[in-house]
Length: 66
Image 1: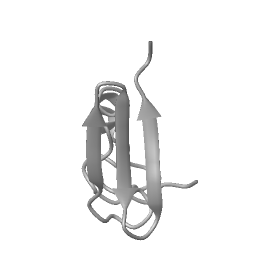
Image 2: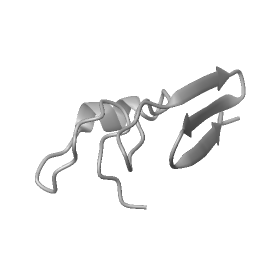
Image 3: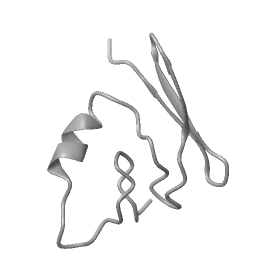
Image 4: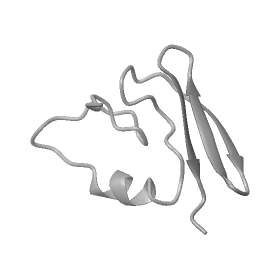
C-alpha cells in the first residue's frame, strides 16, 4: 500500500518531504488519519493493541509487543 497522507497528522506526503516526528510517534501510538483518503479514523485502544477503522477503506489492527 502506498500512503498518500501521513497517518498521524493527516498532511499530504510528498516525495521530498518526510515526517520524522510522526514516524517516531507511530511506533508508540495508533494512526489517526487514513493514509489512503485522509479521513479521520475511529480508533479503539485496548491493553493488547489497537484497532483503527476508516469508513471507506476498512480496518487495520496491531497487537502490543510481548
